[in-house]
Each structure stands twice: as structure tokens, then as C-alpha cells.
Image (cartoon, rainbow, N blue to C red):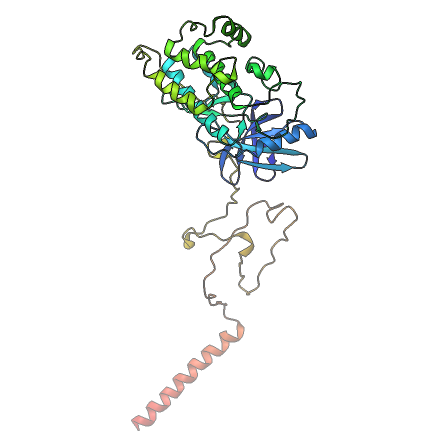
Length: 390
């Protein structure tokens, strides 16, 4: 069995690793279900403060994967989230390459819906990228997106944990104003969504710097190969180097995306269906779908007696009475238990509600007195008969 954290979370196996901590599949002993547990990897004050900020987020939305609970144990801390099994956008593109435009629009719509809820809480994510957008394992059904990893997210107005000369995030997914040292804001998240959209449509990581140069040279450049023009107009607005020219909110981007979908060609009936399958490995030995597999309790066999109808009693309650009425002494139980050193298990007999009468063999006096009494009774009877006859 795995390590039990804070008496509640049994760590099963690692399923991911980030800059600040490792993510484990864990069994929640209280709620009796598997969860994802992020365990803090570093113990310095800076990492701990980021961890505290992340676990404090409570955003209840179907397309957001936010922390649900936290626990501390000695020098370690963790928080838990729902266990999402379908992998990330990176897994999906790795399996299928460039994705169909209509399918991408479904993914983007859900991502923007989750981002709307995040921004409504005043939180800037700051690390939107394919690996941080997860999927439920829905098979060939409608996909279900979950925006995750709020490790460097911050609320607008909170003090920054890094110097203004440093940029936090993933290289290649920075907005141009981030590289200039601007304060984190919602349009930077929307720029990253545009880069993720290009990744899904082209199957490769976009070159953000080259995109900026093309925008500066051509205004709005032509659509990349394989990207329909109506959809490109939405993505180009997300990717505008000028944050004032982008969508101001994720809700505005969703509305524009919905209008673009109506102009897209119908999907080809021969297109391969996209399947989002379970990306997690099998459970390790000792764990099953319903949690840890505990050893079954050991059953000590006892002898059965035909007259008892199969009824058994534990060994310490067994009592066997001898003909003289004495109860033989039981062997003393050792520290190892009542069966230690026994060559065979204790036996037991059923105990009735009332004690059975004790039957004893007749002694020498009984063998003399009984015949004398019989003779006396006979003599008395003969005498009575003789008097009556006279």
C-alpha cells in the first residue's frame, strides 16, 4: 500500500510533475474516490507562498480544474483536484496531428468558457498552453475541456512574487506585452488562447515572434494553410500584438467564435472520429477501481458437530464437562495468541440455554438399598391382602 498523507490521502502512483510539485493519483479515504494530489516539491518560502495562493483558488466551473481541498503532514503539503484521465491538448495532437476546424471550435469554446469564470474571479492564469488544458476521457463523444495548473496565476492587484524584470510562464506562449514587463492582465491570457488554437489546427507549436513580425508587416497576415478564413479572423484578433486591439474579454471571443462556426464547411463524413481515451496507466498492484484491495480476514476453522446443525462457538467459550462434573483446565493463551503451539484447533460444543442434568452411575450403597425396599413393599402388600381375605 502507498503512503497515507495526513491520515486521509493514500498516494498511489505519480502521474505528472511540474516546476513546483509532483502530481499523484491518490485515494481519498474519506470520500472513497480517486483524486489528483499535487505535493509541494520544494520547501522554500517562495514556493510555499505560490502553493498557498494556488490552493486558495476555489472556482467551481465544469471547464476549470481548480483545487478542492488541502492537507499538511509534517514538512509536506498537498492539495487535491478531480482526477482527469483524458490527457491534455498535447496528447490529443500527438495522437491525431492537426485537428478538424469544427472540432477545434468546440475545444476553444469550452476553454474560453472556463477562462471567463477565471477572469470573473479577478484571476489572470498566465500559463495557458496545450499541456495545461486537460480533457476528460469521453471516448468518441463530445469532448470535455478542463483548464488546469494555476501555479503562477495571480489576482489582479496582488503583489508580484517575481521581480518586474523577470517573466514567468512558458516560453513561446508569452504575449508581447509580457516580454515588455507589463503587469499581468486578461488580454495576455487571450493571446495565449490564440496560440493554442494555432497549435490545434496546424499540429505544431507556433512561432510567436514570427507572428508578431508578420502582423507588424502586413497588418493581419493571411491564414495559415488548413485554417478556414472565418476561424482565422477570430484567431487573428486574439493574436494581435496590440492588447488594445484584441478581444477585451473571453466572453467577447466566444461570441465571435460562435459566429465563425456558422460559416465553416460541414465536416467530411469520411473524417476519422477523434477519440479521447484514458491516458492514465493501470492501477498498481494492491489497488482496484474501488480503492485499495485489503487482505481478507483470516478465518480459524473449528470442528463441527452433527447434533449442532453446523453451529460453532469460538474456542475460548468451549466447555467440556467430565462424568464427575469437573471442567478440565484449558491451556493458557500465550502472547502469540490462543492458538500458538496448538497441534490442532480448539473444538467447541453447543451450549444449551439450560444446563443438562448430570447422569451418574449407581454407587455400591444404591445397589443394596434398592432391593431391600422392593422386598419390604412386597411384604406389606401381602399382609394387607391376608387381612382382607380373613
